[in-house]
Length: 190
Image (tube, rainbow, N blue to C red; front, side):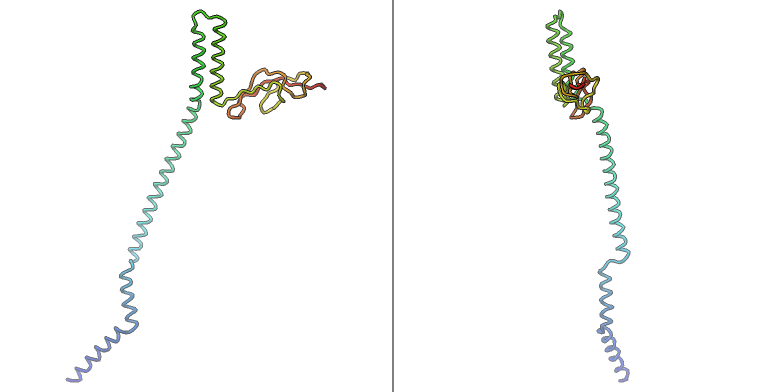
């Protein structure tokens, strides 16, 4: 019976040695680390959630961009429709002046002249506020970007000098919208 009692302590000792061996420690460490780290399924689920969040953010950004584009297009259309509003408001005083001139019960030449002068001042003020500048090149050198020569005339002035303005030109914000119609000097030699 003693032999049966001896092997039992040897088996117990071997199992204690197996538990204490480095391989057993590595296995035990691996199982505790994997218990702490997320499994592949959990990692996949987290990645899918993150992808869904990014997709949602992308959709929102895309929708916002489309809304901004649509609003900008509407603003351009409105700007085109109402760009003349400021100028139109300025022209109202011109019309009022004309109506007042015509409303005089017994107009005289003097009252009509005063009404026309008032109207011209109001129109000049409207042009000035709207950056509409008159081009009156009388006596200046001919500039094909601002003037349109209607004829060339003999003159004592140097060649290519504006000697007569048939119709004034106008520029809006520096851009010629109507060139001045002019007669240009041929010069002394011609």
